[in-house]
Length: 100
Image 1 (tube, helix red, strand yellow):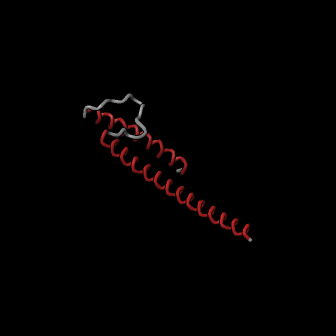
Image 2 (image 1 turned 45 degrees about the vertical axis):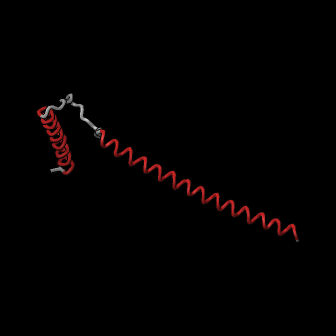
């Protein structure tokens, strides 16, 4: 048997199984009182979050961004301090050069 043909047959079988599984999952949701989706439209993407999950994510992200702003401010503050110190050194050098 040709190896390419065998692979193609397996992919075809896989697609058939995926369609059967999707149909069974739709039937299961319908039996549980969920909405039956239209044939051919598969739900894709992320699941929607509940209110509690959304609140947790919101709080976590607020803390994250607050820490990022704090780190950025500390970085800029240390840069300002180093620039201020360099400015003082150059001013004192200038004074020394003028006094000689």
